[in-house]
Image (cartoon, rainbow, N blue to C red):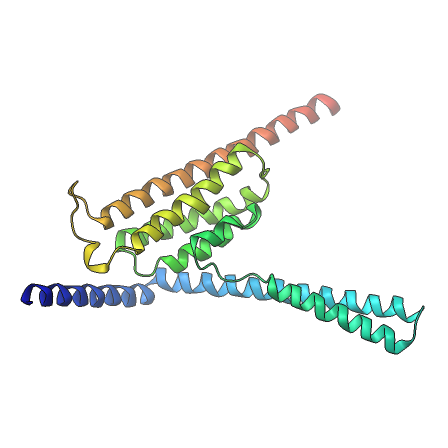
Length: 238
């Protein structure tokens, strides 16, 4: 009974320490930067939603104007209202939502994969060990650089498949797997002498390095492409 009470107390202590660390991170420059990123991501989702609603309203007005020429105004108005209602329902059903889990990243289109991963990673940063949180900040910076490169990448290419597997599958699997471990056991050494926190940090280090290499390779490809095209123009017009 005493041993069990000690384990419970240790668990509460770990939880309290985690909350204290999280409070310090929120007050840090990195924490404020994270909050800014989340606000910007929310604003982008709201702008996309408003744009889609405006397009739906224009489509409904166009339908009303078209139907009004061939039917009664009341019938045209009813049909246009039905179109507007249907489009609004479709927009809200398919509206972008904040990324809640690793599964949500798998469905993100390639041009927005890095952006959605930044939002997801910023949310997951809370509660991570300090070294892992620093790695998350570095990964977010690399994802910001990678975002425009993914927008120009062919989604069917092997490079796109490799990047998607790294960002949308392996990264969430690592973080989600760590979160399933009880707080009190995350700093307990395993059979190999390393703690779950150590495995998390090591895995994030590897992923961060791969993100840097992916960005470098894609950037080098763009440089090669512009050099080839420049040489083509020289040969054609020089």
